[in-house]
Length: 334
Image (cartoon, rainbow, N blue to C red; front, side, top):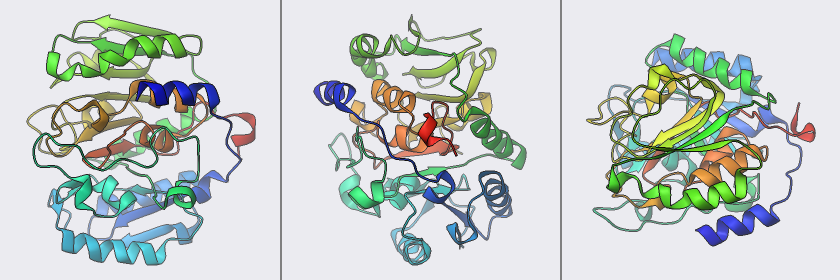
């Protein structure tokens, strides 16, 4: 992974201009009034074309869809998706999985048991990992997916508004990399040395020794490894901020015995990630902080940068405002 990361840092080139509002399709659940409301607001704020808004229907009270129900829904979505769409935005919190896959990975990749694991096992690779491409459906036949989540419309609206506020803002923020005392969940700290070497000239990076970050007012990236993140409400997240914690069940958005990844969004982050099925502590099943930071700083939007950072993506859910693009280049600004 380190070798690939180094190669990409030295060789990655810019991406061609694309109309941002045509790259994405919104999928909402007609049986969930909050999903409909979020979808309508997001379409308006991001100027998504009408034929890029796809309506499906299923029980919104369950945390998991069956393979059979998902197959029906996916067939409907595929039939209605315009060919220029490169990614999806889901506008619900439940369900967050499809059997043994996360719901965002299932929509992106199609349901495939190769992306699942019982116990501590390798799963199928993410073809978009650390790619220097920007049209994943054209190049890899996948559509990266992110869920715009919130327990209320106010929460989802605030998330969407943060994402929009971040666009082309080129914020002066700091990347905080936590070196925690939780040995099993601190495995990403092995990447910190190479991250500092390759990215410290692009953004201030602080490695914090310990489990707690508090009273920081410039959080743009925050990566840690603990079951629950304390003192979140003492920090200020800059619009567009990306933050997550490596633990087993952060992706169980509504019923986790650990900290749900939704808590990052409530605290002010614009994007997060967590696993919905026990992943063990394979770092490949979680965002590589350096890869995520690199692609984001290079001008990718949140959806693409986050998706490119996870090597084995099947068990993890991406949540946030997918089109947030703080570091857009001149030829990427609409």
